[in-house]
Amino acid sequence: MTATPLPLLGTALLIDHFTPLRDWICEAGRAIEIQDFVTPNMSEAETAELIAQWQKLLPAHTGPRGIHGPFLGLDLSTADKEIRALVTKRLLWGVNVAEALSATHMVVHSPFTYWHLLNRANYPFIEPAMFDAMADCLAPVLARAADVGCTVMLENIDDTDPTARVRLVQQINHPNLRVSIDTGHAELAHGRYGAPPVVDYIAAAGATLGHVHLQDADGYADRHWHPGDGRIPWRPVFEALAKLETPPRLILEVREDRTRLPQTVARLEALGLAR
Image (cartoon, rainbow, N blue to C red; front, side, top):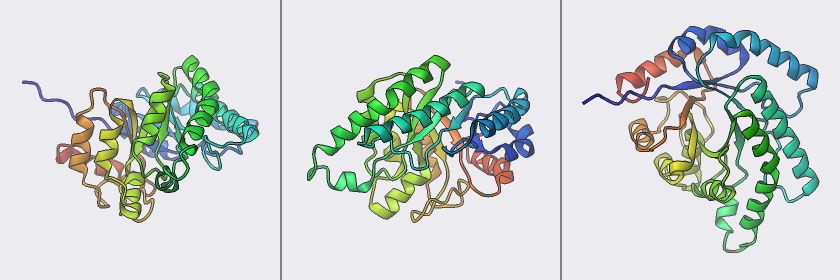
């Protein structure tokens, strides 16, 4: 019997991080997630210049590619239609960047919080209103994403209910919208708010899961540590991911000393978890 190959991990990075890691990324065909475009305040000239800089580097990269879309201050569920139109505009800008960089996924942030979970019975109208607002906000974005071959990945931030994003994605029912899980954000919610552990976020997402940010944490804050430096039990996490019928894109999203990534992955490989 042929052994199932270990999942190949990609990495999130800024443009200055690519060259030091180029050989490690490109020789294995790892996925990258470009994160230089998360700010909604970048001018047209700045955007064009940064895209041009990336385009000079990308011929060396043949693996899957994505971007992190803009998120600062952008609430996909805002009830104000005028503000919602602006959020849509910013996300469409992100899809245009994805097209220019041949990126096939774009991460966006979830608006769900612990307050929403605690008050679902007190204010039963809020969740349906949020779902409707998000569907309206994302409709043009998903249409454009489909045109350019990009999938929008909805990431947990303050989410303490692993099912909320799943139910939203199922309700919108668009092939270019899937769930993303950030393991560190899930661990933070587990430690601070008593949310389920990471493996339960994976189980809840099931077939809707298209993307994972792999980062370690201590259950207190959003650390973005290398896997193995925090308290997340990684063997159960990778075993839960292996049970999925369609493997999600796995992206290491660490904040400090990205030059350690080859050693971090070698450690996971030695444990028989990933490569």
